[in-house]
Image 1: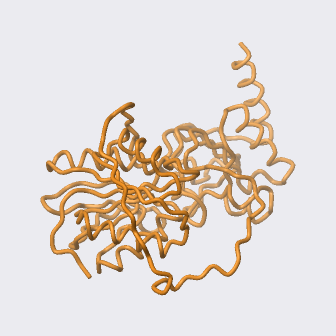
Image 2: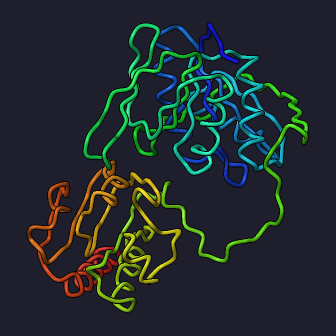
Length: 328
């Protein structure tokens, strides 16, 4: 099944606890810009148990109208099928979603239903006539590649931090409630058991400040300094894969290709060498401070400020000075 025509932009507004995730609100701001230039509209699609508040936030973030489906269903296959029903009805030319784990699960399934192309980890979108040009990182983030999808609809996931949110509090917009039924017989995914992971809840994607530690921190005891610096900065802790594998911190803190893609206002890398796999996950950060005793570490190539020295000596000084400033 494929669409031959379409207009408007549909944004899948992923929710966490019935509130929109930050990257979805960023996408809405960009969608508003793109749609406005073509005289089109932005439609927010919200699938949640209590979607009303998220729908209103989506309108304030740039949507002209929000389509809501009340559902407790979490399986990506079912959510993709629900979105497909909405795409059939509203026939958008472009469907966007955040490049979260859920977004990356749902969008390929959605694209397959319409025999459409799907761009992933998009960092910029430009309208070119009736087509859209998507800028995507390739080769571990070392090269940015422009992609054009000659399908209707075009489907893409957008990397968090690529665009800035723009909230217009109190903005009015239409909220439309839809009922979408997906028969269980059409779903191949079955839930055999639900196991709750026992781990610290960490929201790296929405953090303004992230302090990350790498192999250079040396030990779990030394890694505690990363947590202390994050605490005084009002941020959260990130980590490279070696730090995760050494079990200095939980896997939910991993930043990079095999972890989370982040774009905070401030990123402090402590004892991080700057391997491509890690850099590709944080290159979108607004301001990067790197601390490493190896003056040739690749991390310094992308840092706004580089501090050459032993992180175990530098971090206590930074923590102490920041505390003084906050107490003054």
